[in-house]
Image (cartoon, rainbow, N blue to C red; front, side):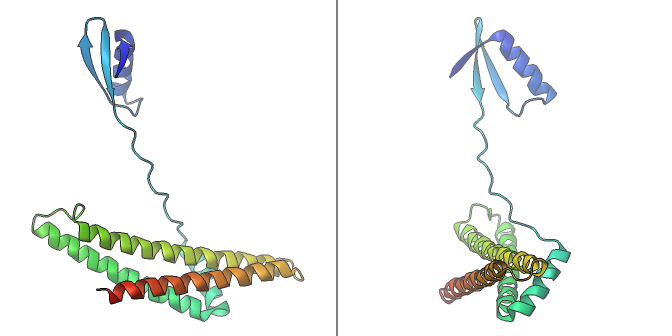
Length: 178
């Protein structure tokens, strides 16, 4: 525990009242010094997944359909599975709440949410690979004759297909475990 002079505590308390600090403090008076209890910092949150605009998704869809229809079909299948699981998870949360249970502390509900989050992470990774391939394709179009961009596009599409196949297998295995 830190011991801080009373003048500093008054200054910090004034700042807290004014909302200038993000730290709440609790002062306990003891003769000429004060004991200050500090809040633990909030752990950093997970970075938000990449979000694509509707226009970007349409460009990626058109590109994927042209270059790798199988990849886009897999994306659609995974997206449908994600939507189905999200709806089922919402129903489960409602049922738990209807019985006075907290879905946030239910281990099965948390496991289902983690599984669904994993599916979304896989989808985002696939979209990122399609985006990489699309950008490489556009660079190739801008500089014809540069084989390296064609190679990058081909590699990104192959990585996307591999990621999609891996995600499909993982979630098929999970479905069989039901």
